Length: 306
Image 1 (tube, rainbow, N blue to C red):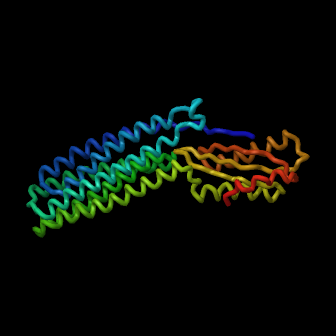
Image 2 (cartoon, one colour):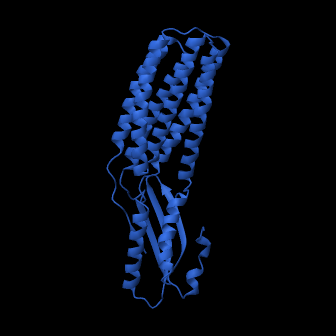
Image 3 (cartoon, rainbow, N blue to C red):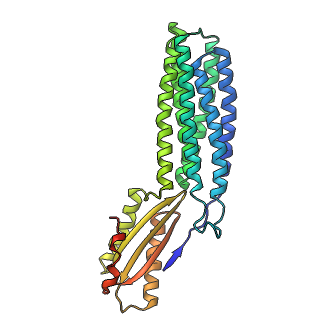
């Protein structure tokens, strides 16, 4: 039985700091835009930026914890800490959605004229461009390093960007048409949109905490690798996978001829493990060697999940 670990990547915490800086900047800009115009749509946009800040702070904390080395109490590391970050951010998004909806309903029944709209829209647009740039960076890094914390932050920022675009268009239409009801109505649409994002983040975090299997394409890559060895008369079963933050854990049983030497079996599983680690980056592979002729080797077929 052998197990190999890949080297830990460089710290991702600097990207959380980037998100924090972007959140503070956009809070100031959007807050200013709201003060200039009095638009509840722009207020909803500013409220979401506070959620961005809270989420980014949580992401920084959980990334630091996730990068901590394995210890006696946590021999598999602390990678699952990232799921707490994404779940927390999802929860904050849900809270923000309720707050935005409440403010919008109040304004819907008590419309207020908007002021200094042109300046307010320009300020809000600048904040949105900052969020867009940071979201693209976080998404690329999160996917490259399989960091759900950074991906959650990026998804949230992109939601903020689309929210801002909708708000800017809506406030512009109010300015042009004088239809004050458009402003709170658009804020309600914003609330519904970010509710969906929050739900998706919470659901994905729950999957991670419940040891969901690796994505189908990664499992298929492992199966494709094993297919080549099956053609050589070898067999495999009990292939199980799980995702833990940025790390993947893969276990399987390898069945070889009983007359093989220990060295032959060892060399084979080393080769298989190296192939799996190449197919699934940052994977920890655990193999169990069994004689293919022994009926006892098939006594644990219930471990198969295919």
